[in-house]
Length: 132
Image (cartoon, rainbow, N blue to C red):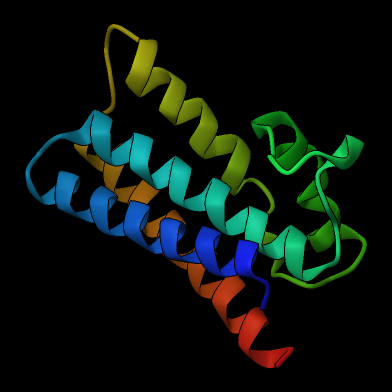
């Protein structure tokens, strides 16, 4: 794994731990926010593992780029289970609700977000292990 992938995987795990902690402490908006970032960071790892780099020769990934480039790893390359396909979109929508919506995120929504993030990171980690 590359230095970039290692760094992003460590961040993904840290974000997931933060999401779980926020959930336990009933800070559902923060839990949703951290769950999304865990998935975003893990998706960067998946893209890097597939040999995909940020467009334009840059070193940084935008959210839009990751959301556009990750799904083909599922649909075309069959690297990950199809259940993961909507995860990025679902969690960014929930993060936006958490960060900007008046109603915020409910406990069940936060629980689902953390569970989805956990499954997403597990799939990325499993794939990374199998390619070693």
